[in-house]
Length: 93
Image 1 (cartoon, rainbow, N blue to C red):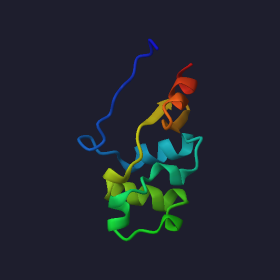
Image 2: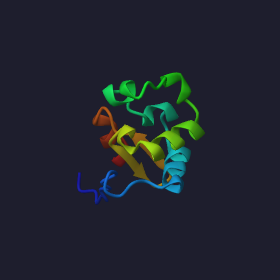
Image 3: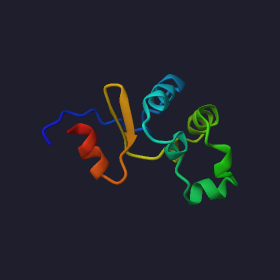
Image 4: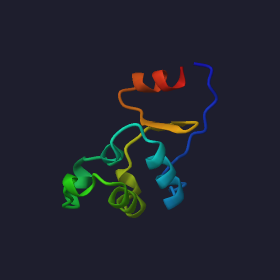
């Protein structure tokens, strides 16, 4: 699309509390969507109902960054979970 991007490898450069809080504040999606509810989530015995508010979501992602849903696309003061990928096109258009 001809848009310059900064790619952050979140497991090499783990997000800080400040970064996660900034994403949460800009997020157009429910904050719960930032958490991957996959087999790793299940193995940890976590309950999705516990991760619907910003504070617990940020705390979880700081402790377990692998549970961060991706891609997260931030443009200006807006952020989205980039799934499905057509959402990214809409944000960048």
